[in-house]
Image (cartoon, rainbow, N blue to C red; front, side, top):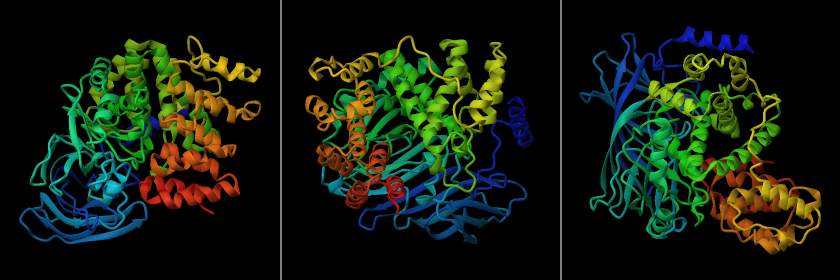
Length: 612
């Protein structure tokens, strides 16, 4: 493996020795070696009646001496006009690439051009835009719009260099109906403006996939000095209660990994159609309402999105081949924050479930599948197709292996140095490896880890002898209860008092064994799992119900699938339904009714499952 490691490092060094060098991105037309963008002035009018954005994007550019053109990514945009800083029209051409990459917007660059203004409109069904009807909101009065730019969807609502390796600052003016409030991944207002026009500024440089916008009937309430919640009026109180620990999370993260560099950290509670748990837009996380369980049991998601303020937003993967640098690091940071605030046992439960999910993903992919590597090979593919548990959980487990060699304090200081060294830069895996060699392996005399690290990053599957070590099994109480069930014990004798969400999920997962399946109706009758209001428990239970055709749960399962748009919950249930002809028929009927409630990200995932 050492030979493989050396080859990768040498190839990287041959390309560049500078930490801020641009690397080739197979998913962007950008050509940053010729010309880059440094700042964006954006003027948007949001038309809810026509469901489109009318925009003017003015880019400050920096070009090389030989540059004759500048290249942007655009997908489905109607380009009205392109001019330079003096108003002179510039010649441009839209060159089609493919369906998910969109077009190469190439613009001629006379020598005097320093600024380019692009007037445009978004197209119908722009992938990044979710137009939510009033009936799909909590308040039922006003429509709602939100963007989801990751990974390569920013180009569907903004002509940009849509590569995570290219960063810029921005200012924006956004006009909406006067009853609405607008927020962006920038400095945000906290009250509605009667004019309907809002001004934004993002001083720190970010890549295009972190461009974000949402508009609707929103209110704001502070949690702490630097934290707060945006939500619809009918949701704000429950959200404020649920996320009461946000300020504590921020202070804990700073203690562990260094200063928070984005000013404020706020959370916007999204409509149920939001396809992800959260999106780490700088200064404002977009979060699914499915984490509002009423008991603060699912708030590790907020710790995860906050952690992205260091890993992902501050130090960013330069290409989607290096996605694990964003997500593996973030899962590690999240669980360190959770352990500090809620205890090691809580964190170990998350890690145990996460490792099981990782093993299941690798089993589905196949042990030699290249997508089970941390360093991906996504040339010629849509990056969304490979964004699995691997980047998250395999990345976390690699970093945990390194931490176990030196201890928490030394590894936390190493990470703080890493974030400081690469702050506001986009890097590739090989840059992390070089930094790790110098600041961790050599410094603490653990050079024996080099070949193992290389295996984790560049080889598929998990190392054969790898398992996480715990002082005791994280789900000892649950496993004891399952043994009681296997011996035919009375359900009422099980001590489930004070079980956490993760313990219930583990319990449900353990039921997937033949001797216990016959007791599912009895278990449901005692513990009322079909009627649970906790989305994590519902998802696990309905997946089991779909797999074994426990039809007493189908009514609640259908309501869940119609109401919730989070891809993590949808895919497993639809996948199990699709295993039988009658189940697939039901899944198709539900999906046809629910389709318009789902974001295109979720639509695409379910269509893949249900295709003939």
